[in-house]
View 1 (spheres, rainbow, N blue to C red):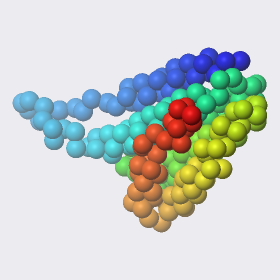
View 2: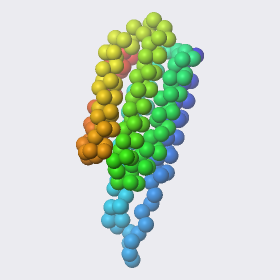
View 3: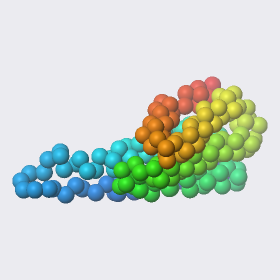
View 4: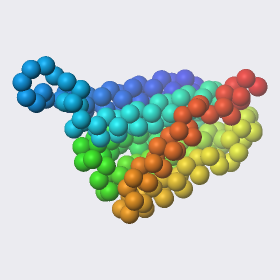
Amino acid sequence: MPSGRLEAFSDGVMAILITIMVLELAVPHHRGHGVATMADLRPLVPVLLSYVLSFVYLVIYWNNHHHLLRAAPRVSGATLWANLHLLFWLSLVPFATAWMGENGFAPHTLALYGIVLFGSGFAYLLLEITLMHTDESISQRLLAVLDGGLKEKISMLLYLVGIGLSFVQPAIAGAIYVLVALVWLVPDRRLEQAMVD
């Protein structure tokens, strides 16, 4: 099957997930008399911060997913299932985001958020591996640029550290999740280079 169909389906799902997240943002209720002010947003700061972080994560996945599928002109049935596995984990992002934001980054909500990030990272790595087994030409192209998924594996290790620290040092756990997002914020140049070659 051409990878374009899989990419279009995945793009639609990710767009819906972003839409669901933004719909979860409630308009602040004005407190007091007169005109609404920026101070009305103060109680929503954790919700807004969690939304921004999750938006960045979903955009990172969308961007890298696009480049990954461009490296594979066709996909197998196993690839379809691996992609659905990734979309399953990404579909949990709006729930984990809302729970974390509405509870002010409480330890158990940070841990769940980390679990969702870990599951998404593992699913993405599994998708890469599955694509590499689609055919020899795809495998050689991806192996040449992905370095055995080192960046992905380090990210997943950091997610596990963040999950554990959620109950001991929640601020550090949150900082780890932000750090991993920053590392991935620039599109994966390895895959961009593979598209040029």
